[in-house]
Image 1 (cartoon, rainbow, N blue to C red):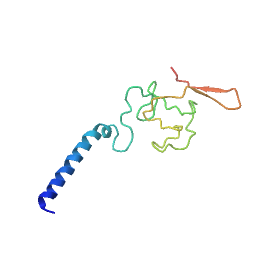
Image 2: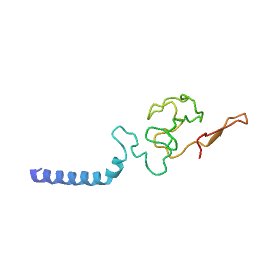
Image 3: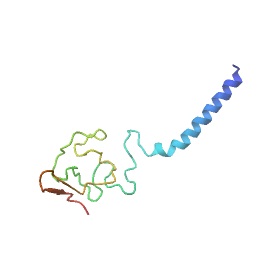
Image 4: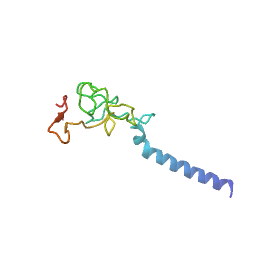
Amino acid sequence: MSLSTLRGDRTYLEEKTRQQQQREGPKRDERSRDGFDSNADRQGAKYTAEGLLKVNGADLCDCLEVDCPGCFYPCPKCSSNKCGHECRQGRKWTYDSYQIEGTDKVVTNPYKS
């Protein structure tokens, strides 16, 4: 293999790498270095990047109890005990209500507008 062939291969690889970076650029910019979604202010998000309700800044647990200190296992993404099955950071939805099985009790979101 000659030196000119190696240089040609390197140029080809550099060009492919550059093209791939251009395609992935916008995707990469959506996430911060620590892996959290830094684009939490996107349209439609109900929670901030810190996991607080955008409506009033409340730190409402997903059990919908206002004074709850957190009753879930720690979130794998943010370590909060207030996230249910999905992290609240930048989340686009909230729980409206839920019914406790075997009873007629319905718990509703106190901040639902």
